[in-house]
Image (tube, rainbow, N blue to C red; front, side, top):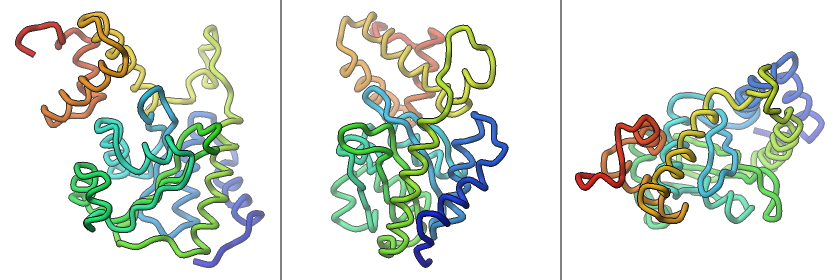
Length: 240
């Protein structure tokens, strides 16, 4: 693709967002990304406390790959959020990228994702999340496409920051714009707190236990957290 220029990119994003309710904005942003870049999937994640929080995904596969990084605590998305700099995996089947994120690279490649570009939303000082781009073919984005991607990351950041903040007394749409993907991850934080109380450990250790147990059971950390919150699983049970 040819670099379209900031005004043209902003115009297409604005076109996608026209008439969107707050809860529709994250998904519309992914739709705009697919219109503007030669990528097969895209997702947007917020930077949570110790893990990314999936906000929107262009499809089921993008959602799976994003959730995979949440469960593992590892991958391009996590690294971009931590460093505040773009992270590119040109070929997840290559030794270089497979060694950087061994489990993530293997499982993402298994569903057909060969290359990833994760762009921070913000910068190293204030990074609110990441825009993640997935392709079926190996290789980095062309220079013009990368420039477009950086502009998109800036526009996505501005759009998310402009969304209304939830108020405790507000039952309306503005108070629930994180639904449906991100809202479910509240259970992960609840589960972390419950594991902390059950075992008398710190939050980072509790999250690591959840991740390790999820990986061992071949499930996601979100699904495992639901078991903890609904009391179907206790970490102080000697059989766990």
